[in-house]
Structures are given as C-alpha cells and as structure tokens.
Length: 435
Image (cartoon, rainbow, N blue to C red; front, side, top):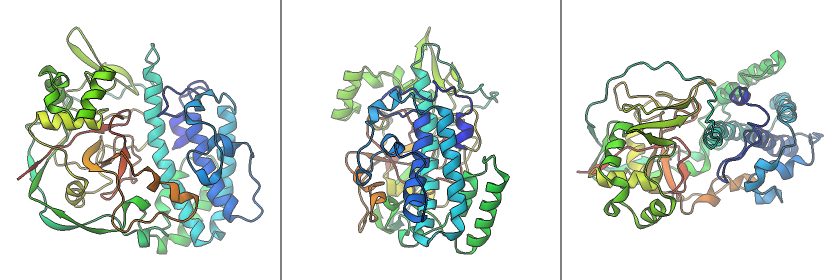
C-alpha cells in the first residue's frame, strides 16, 4: 500500500516538506522500513547487516534511546537518498523481514505486528502530508483525478442517540494484545509486494500463526478499566460542511463567547476564518483535496478543523464534544471496518452519510478528553516504550478513523491524539449533550 500511495509522485514531490508537522513522503517510506530494520532485524536476527549505517541518523523519528537524529523541520532538505534508493531500501528490508518471520521469537513477532500498525499510521500521515505539501503550491495540483460525484440529498437534522449511563468498561486488554501476532495486517502490508516468493513467505507465516493470533492494540489503549458515565446523548452523525458554513455566516469565528481563551488567541493570531483548505470566491466556498480544488459538498462531513474550532462550534450549537469514554461506549457495538476508510490508492475524501450512525471512517472525531494515561498504564521496556507515553501532555483524543485510515486499522478503543491547534489531518466533529 505504501508504494502504491506514492506511485503518482515524482522524486521532487516526495522530497518537499511544507511545514514542521508534516514530513516528506520519502521520509515516511524510509522511516517505516527503518523501524522494522532496527527493532526486528538488528535486534532479533543474528548476523543481519544494516543496509546503510547512515540511515539511522536520517530516519529515526523521536526515539531518544536510538541516539542522535536529523532535525524534524529539516527533513525536506534530504534531496538524497533518492526516491528510487529508498524504494530499494524498502525492498531489501521487507524481504529480510519475511525471510526471518518463521524463526522469530515471540517478542520479535510482537514487534512485527507493531511495525505493521505503525506503517498503517504512516500511510495516513503520508496522505495528509502530501495534501498539505500540494496545497501550498500556487498551481494546487491534484494527486489523483477526482472520483465521479454521485448526487446525495442533504441529511436531515441531527438525531440523538442516548448513551450508556453508569459504570462501563473502557480500553483494550493490553496484557493479551501486547504479544499478538497480527497476521491479517501482515498480509495486507505485503499485498503490494512485487515478489511472488515474498507473498508465499507471508502465506506460510499466516498458516503457522493463525491459530494463535490475538487482537492488536497500542499500549496507550489500555489497561482496560472502568469509567463512570452520566446521562448523555451523542449525535447520530458528524457535522456537515453545510452546517459549518452556517456557523461561519453567523459570525462564529468572530464571536469570542464560543471560544476557549487559547482558541480565541489562536484564531486572532493566525487569522482563522474557515476550515483548513477552504476558500471563498464570489460567495462560493471551495476546498482543496487530493483531487485538487473543488466546490465543497454541503452534505459531506466537515473536516480539517482543530479542537479549538470543534469546541467553538459545539458551543455555538448549544452542545459539547463527547468524552472519549462516551464515544467508545457507543461505538463498541459498531463494526470498526465499516464506513469510508482507505482501501486502495486513489481519491480520498469524506463522503456524505447514507444513513445510520457511522462511528468509523470519513473523519477523526475530536473528543473533549485530554490524552493522558489510563489507570495502571506502563510503557513497554526499551526504545519502543517511547511510542506513545512520552506524548501524554497537552494533546486531545480523537476517535473513529478517517477516509485516509487503512481499513482494519481502527477499533473502538483506538486513541488518536493531536495538539488542539492542529488540523491538517482529516478531523471532524460529532456533538454530544447532557441529559
């Protein structure tokens, strides 16, 4: 999948970096392979020789235990290695991992599963980063041609789903999932391999491990614990572009009554007056997407809004954002593989709801919950213990997955997280209210 996502890009497209939060496509490709090479091959395959000793400095992200690294804001200066060299690096690492799979110890198998899910995270980041890179180009080029538009009627008024009340169980059982072997994702990750031999290795690995595979979860999704919910209701769909346009027309971005103090400071300092990628000309709103600039679809979910904007909209609408516990309790009864999620390379954008309370896909949904550890949380030993725990400060939780999330990656317990001002991801809003 990763190679398919970058297939339309030139070496220059894959090298540029439009802001500190976004990384070049080339860097995403190399970093995900560095993860496998470092934590699986280097540490668990006797006799493995590092492909290029210089790559550790270039493609380490934030693992302090792995030593010095190239500064994140300067990743776009890496004109070398070339895209072709990085693709060759990926092929070498992938083949080495597949050859090693039958003989890996359980702790290494767990790292293979973590690496597969880690790469799926970077597939989504790769898409959202490409979108931002292209948005600052005055030509505003499209990555892919737009998908044919199927006329869809505007959804009716928001309905409300009464949520659970009292004690509920929240989170994943990380004691079992931390040693899981995620065969399905291992197969999905290598579906695009050009080597029939490599595909055969995966199929053999699947046969060897299918009887013991367990659900996967990141460390921050557990431990499973109890949470207390008060009477509340959640909206049966997310907020649409048309509803957001009404918020704008009513002066929502100019009325401090609806904004948190930090949000109001951000709006004024940055001159924010609409979601990211929106432009208005002659009274018509357009948005920039991976298929270029097009008129907004008023029936589609609004996206590319920050936590500050989501909270202000909820205030304007006489509601609030759900807590992550309210969201998870409601979403647990729904299929996490449903909804509009990433299946293949091609046009990626939120789609109008066609009925039913879809909790997964289209847009990540901001919650009002800070990203903090659950009771009893302990990061794993070693460098991979830096994966989530070190970021539990100043960020807010999002739930549900988006149109750019690989299908099968999301689940009810999944905790995505970003800083409250960030909005280059496919982030949207589901309202909640007290009863």
